[in-house]
Length: 191
Image (cartoon, rainbow, N blue to C red; front, top):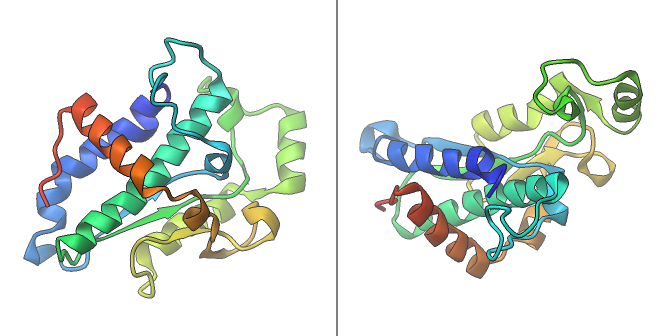
Protein backbone atom coordinates (compact mmCIF):
# COMPACT_ATOMS: atom_id res chain seq x y z
CA UNK A 1 0.00 0.00 0.00
CA UNK A 2 2.40 2.61 -1.21
CA UNK A 3 2.14 5.51 -0.14
CA UNK A 4 -0.27 3.80 2.23
CA UNK A 5 2.64 2.65 4.35
CA UNK A 6 3.20 6.20 5.53
CA UNK A 7 -0.18 7.79 4.82
CA UNK A 8 -2.29 5.02 6.35
CA UNK A 9 -0.46 2.16 8.04
CA UNK A 10 1.89 4.34 10.08
CA UNK A 11 -0.99 6.42 11.43
CA UNK A 12 -3.09 3.31 12.01
CA UNK A 13 -0.30 1.69 14.05
CA UNK A 14 0.50 4.83 16.03
CA UNK A 15 -3.16 5.33 16.94
CA UNK A 16 -3.46 1.69 18.00
CA UNK A 17 -0.39 1.99 20.22
CA UNK A 18 -1.70 5.22 21.78
CA UNK A 19 -5.24 3.90 22.20
CA UNK A 20 -4.90 2.93 25.89
CA UNK A 21 -3.89 6.51 26.71
CA UNK A 22 -6.56 7.99 24.42
CA UNK A 23 -9.35 5.97 26.01
CA UNK A 24 -8.26 6.15 29.66
CA UNK A 25 -10.64 7.96 32.03
CA UNK A 26 -7.98 10.62 32.59
CA UNK A 27 -8.01 11.50 28.87
CA UNK A 28 -11.64 12.56 28.89
CA UNK A 29 -12.94 13.34 25.43
CA UNK A 30 -9.68 12.91 23.50
CA UNK A 31 -9.65 13.09 19.71
CA UNK A 32 -8.01 11.30 16.87
CA UNK A 33 -7.87 13.49 13.77
CA UNK A 34 -7.07 11.74 10.49
CA UNK A 35 -5.88 13.92 7.64
CA UNK A 36 -7.35 12.85 4.33
CA UNK A 37 -7.62 14.67 1.00
CA UNK A 38 -10.20 15.53 -1.62
CA UNK A 39 -8.24 12.96 -3.65
CA UNK A 40 -10.05 10.34 -1.53
CA UNK A 41 -13.14 11.10 -3.63
CA UNK A 42 -11.60 9.26 -6.58
CA UNK A 43 -9.97 6.62 -4.40
CA UNK A 44 -10.79 2.94 -4.32
CA UNK A 45 -9.24 0.33 -2.05
CA UNK A 46 -7.72 -2.31 -4.33
CA UNK A 47 -7.26 -5.22 -1.95
CA UNK A 48 -5.64 -7.26 -4.73
CA UNK A 49 -2.86 -4.70 -5.22
CA UNK A 50 -2.24 -2.92 -1.93
CA UNK A 51 1.53 -3.03 -2.34
CA UNK A 52 1.64 -1.99 -6.00
CA UNK A 53 3.18 -5.27 -7.13
CA UNK A 54 0.54 -5.57 -9.89
CA UNK A 55 1.04 -2.06 -11.19
CA UNK A 56 1.58 1.30 -9.62
CA UNK A 57 0.24 4.75 -10.41
CA UNK A 58 1.28 7.55 -8.05
CA UNK A 59 -2.07 9.39 -8.05
CA UNK A 60 -4.07 6.17 -7.85
CA UNK A 61 -2.13 5.06 -4.79
CA UNK A 62 -2.24 8.51 -3.20
CA UNK A 63 -6.03 8.56 -3.62
CA UNK A 64 -6.27 5.03 -2.21
CA UNK A 65 -4.18 5.97 0.83
CA UNK A 66 -6.27 9.06 1.51
CA UNK A 67 -9.48 7.06 1.19
CA UNK A 68 -7.91 4.63 3.67
CA UNK A 69 -7.40 7.58 6.08
CA UNK A 70 -11.07 8.52 5.76
CA UNK A 71 -12.34 4.96 6.19
CA UNK A 72 -10.05 4.47 9.19
CA UNK A 73 -11.42 7.59 10.91
CA UNK A 74 -15.03 6.56 10.32
CA UNK A 75 -14.47 2.95 11.38
CA UNK A 76 -12.55 4.05 14.48
CA UNK A 77 -15.53 6.23 15.46
CA UNK A 78 -17.89 3.27 15.04
CA UNK A 79 -15.65 1.14 17.28
CA UNK A 80 -15.18 3.86 19.89
CA UNK A 81 -18.95 4.39 20.04
CA UNK A 82 -19.65 0.66 20.30
CA UNK A 83 -17.16 0.42 23.19
CA UNK A 84 -18.75 3.38 24.97
CA UNK A 85 -15.46 5.31 24.87
CA UNK A 86 -15.45 9.07 25.41
CA UNK A 87 -12.73 9.50 22.75
CA UNK A 88 -13.83 10.52 19.26
CA UNK A 89 -12.44 10.17 15.74
CA UNK A 90 -12.71 12.85 13.06
CA UNK A 91 -11.39 13.17 9.51
CA UNK A 92 -10.44 16.38 7.78
CA UNK A 93 -8.96 17.60 4.51
CA UNK A 94 -7.31 20.89 3.54
CA UNK A 95 -8.99 21.33 0.16
CA UNK A 96 -6.53 22.49 -2.47
CA UNK A 97 -3.71 24.32 -0.76
CA UNK A 98 -0.76 26.08 -2.29
CA UNK A 99 2.03 23.87 -0.95
CA UNK A 100 4.99 22.04 -2.42
CA UNK A 101 3.17 18.67 -2.45
CA UNK A 102 3.93 18.18 -6.12
CA UNK A 103 7.66 18.63 -5.63
CA UNK A 104 7.47 14.94 -4.62
CA UNK A 105 9.53 15.23 -1.48
CA UNK A 106 12.45 16.97 -3.17
CA UNK A 107 12.29 19.84 -0.69
CA UNK A 108 12.14 22.28 -3.60
CA UNK A 109 9.31 24.70 -4.08
CA UNK A 110 6.70 23.80 -6.63
CA UNK A 111 7.18 25.35 -10.04
CA UNK A 112 5.68 28.67 -11.00
CA UNK A 113 2.94 27.06 -13.13
CA UNK A 114 1.83 24.76 -10.28
CA UNK A 115 1.77 27.67 -7.85
CA UNK A 116 -0.42 29.71 -10.19
CA UNK A 117 -2.71 26.77 -10.85
CA UNK A 118 -3.17 26.00 -7.17
CA UNK A 119 -3.68 29.66 -6.32
CA UNK A 120 -6.42 29.93 -8.97
CA UNK A 121 -8.49 27.00 -7.66
CA UNK A 122 -7.37 26.68 -4.06
CA UNK A 123 -6.19 28.69 -1.12
CA UNK A 124 -3.10 29.29 0.99
CA UNK A 125 -1.43 26.64 3.10
CA UNK A 126 -2.54 28.60 6.17
CA UNK A 127 -6.19 28.36 5.10
CA UNK A 128 -5.63 24.69 4.31
CA UNK A 129 -4.55 24.12 7.91
CA UNK A 130 -7.85 25.47 9.33
CA UNK A 131 -9.94 22.28 8.83
CA UNK A 132 -7.38 20.30 10.87
CA UNK A 133 -7.43 22.88 13.66
CA UNK A 134 -11.23 22.97 13.57
CA UNK A 135 -11.47 19.17 13.70
CA UNK A 136 -9.05 19.05 16.62
CA UNK A 137 -10.56 21.82 18.73
CA UNK A 138 -14.17 22.67 17.89
CA UNK A 139 -16.38 21.64 20.84
CA UNK A 140 -19.34 20.94 18.51
CA UNK A 141 -17.55 17.98 16.91
CA UNK A 142 -19.23 14.73 17.95
CA UNK A 143 -17.09 12.21 16.06
CA UNK A 144 -17.45 10.59 12.67
CA UNK A 145 -17.44 13.88 10.74
CA UNK A 146 -15.35 14.88 7.76
CA UNK A 147 -14.30 18.53 7.96
CA UNK A 148 -13.11 20.46 4.91
CA UNK A 149 -13.33 23.88 3.29
CA UNK A 150 -16.87 25.17 2.73
CA UNK A 151 -16.28 26.57 -0.76
CA UNK A 152 -17.34 25.09 -4.08
CA UNK A 153 -16.17 21.49 -4.37
CA UNK A 154 -14.50 21.68 -0.96
CA UNK A 155 -11.45 23.20 -2.63
CA UNK A 156 -11.17 26.40 -0.60
CA UNK A 157 -12.87 28.30 2.17
CA UNK A 158 -13.44 28.04 5.88
CA UNK A 159 -13.89 24.77 7.80
CA UNK A 160 -17.27 23.07 7.73
CA UNK A 161 -18.69 19.54 7.68
CA UNK A 162 -18.15 17.89 4.28
CA UNK A 163 -20.91 15.50 3.16
CA UNK A 164 -18.53 13.57 0.89
CA UNK A 165 -17.36 11.57 3.90
CA UNK A 166 -20.72 9.86 4.19
CA UNK A 167 -20.85 9.18 0.45
CA UNK A 168 -17.46 7.44 0.50
CA UNK A 169 -18.17 5.53 3.73
CA UNK A 170 -18.50 1.79 3.13
CA UNK A 171 -18.51 -0.03 6.48
CA UNK A 172 -17.77 -3.39 4.86
CA UNK A 173 -14.69 -2.04 3.04
CA UNK A 174 -13.65 -0.17 6.20
CA UNK A 175 -13.83 -3.35 8.31
CA UNK A 176 -11.86 -5.32 5.74
CA UNK A 177 -9.24 -2.57 5.55
CA UNK A 178 -9.08 -2.54 9.35
CA UNK A 179 -8.40 -6.30 9.46
CA UNK A 180 -5.70 -6.03 6.77
CA UNK A 181 -4.14 -3.05 8.58
CA UNK A 182 -3.97 -4.94 11.88
CA UNK A 183 -2.36 -7.89 10.13
CA UNK A 184 0.18 -5.77 8.22
CA UNK A 185 1.18 -3.63 11.22
CA UNK A 186 0.88 -6.27 13.94
CA UNK A 187 -1.03 -3.69 16.02
CA UNK A 188 -4.41 -4.74 17.40
CA UNK A 189 -6.85 -2.19 18.74
CA UNK A 190 -8.27 -3.30 22.06
CA UNK A 191 -11.60 -1.60 22.59
